Length: 396
Image (tube, rainbow, N blue to C red; front, side, top):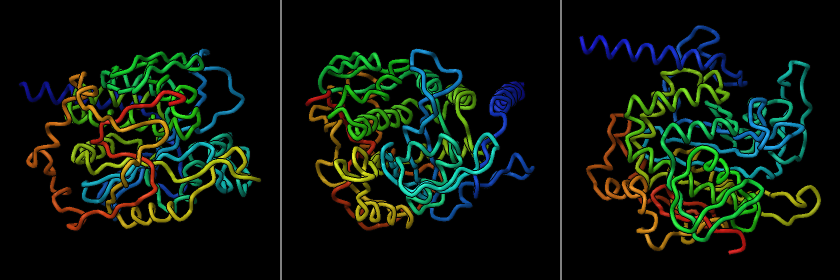
């Protein structure tokens, strides 16, 4: 009887999430299992691992007026996640919103035709006419990688998803005050969720040098702690928490047709659960500011470093970062006890120190990607997920 009851509850929950999903976004080149009646491909079907693009948009018809009025929707956050085929390593690449790159011709989301290709534009303009599909095509052209899954999350989505997991402990080295986002944090560790988590991720004027590049490294402080928290509190194995997270995502995100499937979401959760924190890198797409011409006031790609980075990802090979790789908006936390003031922040350190705990939990993750020590890519900015880091306040 208990088994039947549990199965019934699970079926109801799955039905509710499916209803929330609605129709997925058509992305050129990605499978569309729900729209054509076919089954979603297994993650293992993608040789060399899978790639997923997560886009953060700055405008939404349902968002609160406190976030301001905007003439167009821009993709101000662009993160490309690669998970290796054996689920032993992953790389999340944050692409600066002002990175100048070609934007291909894309079908307009309003169905009025095709937006013309542009030779050199900030990447955050690629969403305005062509939506998630155009951002995906742009990032594929920039990186040379095939992207199998895409998702776009609005401000409201960030709020609801941070609430679903109960908050994320974040360390800041100095007090952060940003009147533009309303963020006011003391030095030390605070657990952020809801509006405060969104304000932290949005703040640019409050961290580093006040630029988007500083914001990216500060965001990596949040994202690395998020992953540590999710793994330490069994989010990915807790049916209740997973249900809350799935409903928050389904109700507040645009998902590609390839991702708009509960079975695919479950597979991804299992893949993320297997990942050793030390083998997850958060990196910034390499680039510099201060150029001339089309690069004036924008970000110019550092091609030789980008080529090395994406060659590793395309070959499904892990790599390590050089010393002092944290960016201008973060710093290594020299005193782990400060970050450990929150139980959620302290929990990850124990499992990672235990060889048994770090062992892969699924057959797919049984074989390591390579037995040799991963190559170090000097010059990349970022951090691994097991690094305890703190955001630096503006001017420090």
